[in-house]
Image 1 (spheres, rainbow, N blue to C red):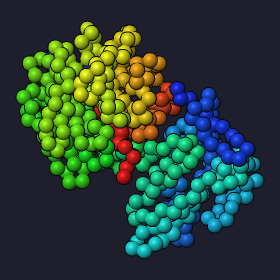
Image 2: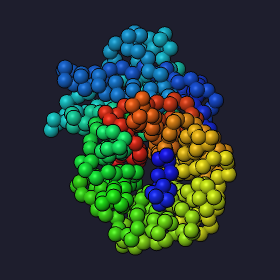
Image 3: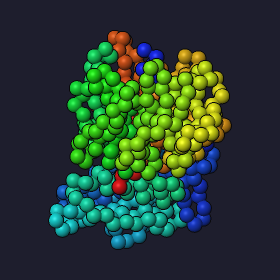
Image 4: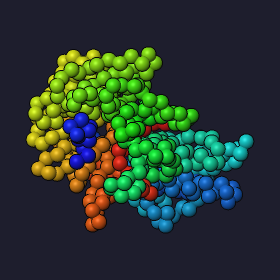
Length: 439
């Protein structure tokens, strides 16, 4: 069972909804209604075929981003009464209320200097008949997909009050080959599954990658000479650096919120403890000293507390402590075994994996251990990772196949347990980690 991989190495509510006020429509993600808001997204206009194609592609990506969030229900273009809209003019609201649209997005793509394009969009509240948002963005032609994600983020934030998460990436382990002869290499994709890029060759297996706070570096574990060690990969330069030449095995890395330190587990002589390394000074500090196995450390967003998994009580449970290792407190007391704990970037929840009655679950609890609830279940489900706004979780599921192998897929779910989706990847995929919003 891969959930307790680190142990085995050593041992041999927010509910979604919609609110309508007289002045403005907005998506209330704290209410009890889960009906997505109907939104009309017109193809962005352009004066020539190339610009019109870019505009259509941008509108399509924006529509797909918002739909996947579960908060919005894009209306089919076939239902539109108005097929074109001048960016400089207000819409005819009657033509949008007749198709039950509650919000409207339209835009324009123009040629700019140095082979760039100028993209403008507007977001309208059809119910209140007011403009909610308008932005002008300048970019390279080839960068239209990222511009679409940025526009989707603007719309999401304006209508929910929360930051969007569409202009982000996912790093994961791309797996090919049979279960007994598996090639594992680092891969990065946009959060919608596009723009795949492989970062390592696969000659040496890798696991558990995580992004730095600025999304420019990745910490991961590699099995060079069959022994796990933590490496740092620089995405911009492609350089890889061993975190430290530790006497034992090192694994389970996580960056501190300020990106200046990495927290890891180091195992020696059958026991593992949690350490923190300052990336500039390379100074290593031991945070736990216990004969039990301590692993899966994760920082609180303010960097003051650390959650981790320990079997010091007889079975793997979740604990928290101060960053200096003091004030250790057990917070999980439910039935079953806990693992893969991950602190929400909002600071309110801890995500975790739980094994109970031979079933695997993704669960949430408040930072003090209360309010535990399970939001996803699978044959094996592991490695929960948070969207940067703390509203969605990506994890992976391993499912046995008829030929005795294993099918690995990335999946996402809202923190309410609704809107569960499978992400498309060209190969088997495991160990996802969500980037912060891109700079």
